[in-house]
View 1 (tube, rainbow, N blue to C red):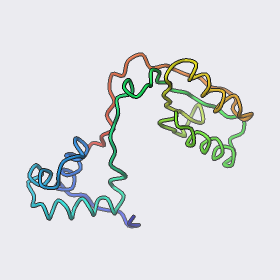
View 2 (tube, one colour):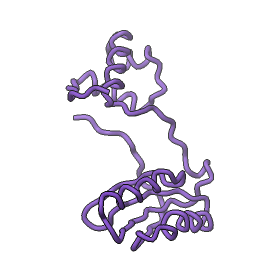
View 3 (cartoon, helix red, strand yellow):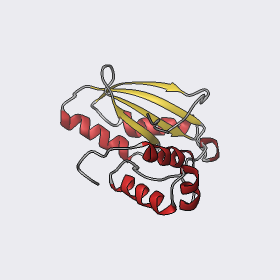
Length: 158
């Protein structure tokens, strides 16, 4: 990854927008949709990957088909907020496969987690592993998703 900041022009943003909508486009299809040559598309996408603008390419699965019946949003407050305590909890959350997102937040709780579980017993097991077993976890407030009205990981361009 490059150290220096990268400047993005309209063509870069057009390519990024197209890839965010459908990362499975062939280079030929991407170039055609972006109104650039295939060589230009390939060179620019490589530059965006090398610069860290494109973090990774992945497939998004519908949770209901992956055996994930519950989506839980958990606010987690720790007793001690020293860097080593925050880092330790974060490492445990990152290692937990059920945790889909982990955010350090301020003000309020120390972390907000998005976790998926098959059902309530599976969520209870997660709480035992992640929260109850950690003596530094002071408080957990969990909200359960009733309906996902929007989920859009796309980063909008200018």
